[in-house]
Length: 351
Image (tube, rainbow, N blue to C red; front, top):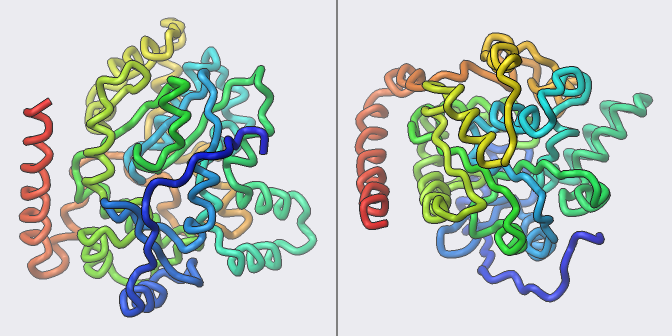
């Protein structure tokens, strides 16, 4: 616990959802067994466990040389993690293929989503498989504990979906590097996140997409509300330790983004290896890479086994068919997005 500071009081209210909404969500999200809370004025949504853990996460002691990838889920997080780790480690492809990304780039708050009952179930399903059980224990350990075991001499790479307001204040105080990736196509995010919530047994969503979109609009899902999340990050975009990227830019001009990230980290990419890096990150290759595609999560049963898996299409603007399949849903989505984008644009133009 050496990387937890003492004395910072968590500054936001944490309120349980009303009983009716909570009971409904428990019917459709089978990975949570206790209930859900909303945090602060934006009402960020988390499992009940956050109520007892908020202060521990908030008091985590960041280091100056930490590198954080912060995103709303399904915004190119894994892709960016692999890219950043490779740039910061001299394009060491061999180590990147040998050691899973979950180990090289720990997920700060994942343990919040491993309910004790689900953990017991995962351990029982992996009885007699010590390696699998050790992995389950590791991934259900709080990030603030796990990261404190990394020596001061070793640079830490940290993944988080926390919005800026819920990140430990020490991250900004220490001027840790933060790379935030925003995916501005909300329909793409929602469709991808819907499939992820069905894939992860820790979420265990069993409803259809129309219901899920209703929850998405209302901010009733992990790390939501979506627009609050990206607006908060946008407010920090001019800080010297923050690089604000858009996922659509990455898909359009990956070499240009590689240059931006390299400059931000004060590193250089070996130009002779650029083609190899782009090949490594190509979505068709990326989906098959067992070090990044969640294979170890599937092996212990945290992920369901599905044809699409953890890494999906990786494209932009490919989600419209899900909305067209439900009557009136596309019009509803366009209206909601336009309203929120107008508010976002007002913020952009006043800064």
